[in-house]
Structures are given as structure tokens and as C-alpha cells.
View (cartoon, rainbow, N blue to C red):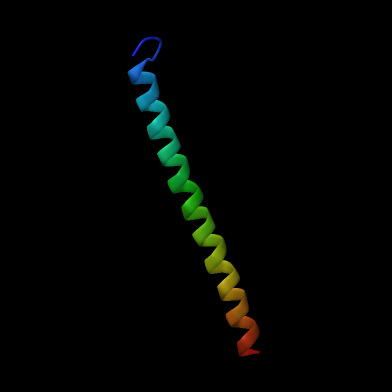
Length: 44
């Protein structure tokens, strides 16, 4: 393919994949904290 740097595209893909994983982990941590807060409220 003309005008496409395959190495650059592969690095961009890996970067996007790592960003997605980091965002998923942050979302799950936030979800767990919210669930813990709800559980604390139920136990009072």
C-alpha cells in the first residue's frame, strides 16, 4: 500500500490496545469502589 508505514500503524495499534486496557481497568476500579460504597450504605 502506498503512503502507509506499516511499522507506524502497528505501533499505533499497540498503543490504542494498551490505552483501551488501561481505561477498562480504571472503569472496573471505579465500578468496584461504587459497589463498595453501596455495600457500606446497606450495612449501616
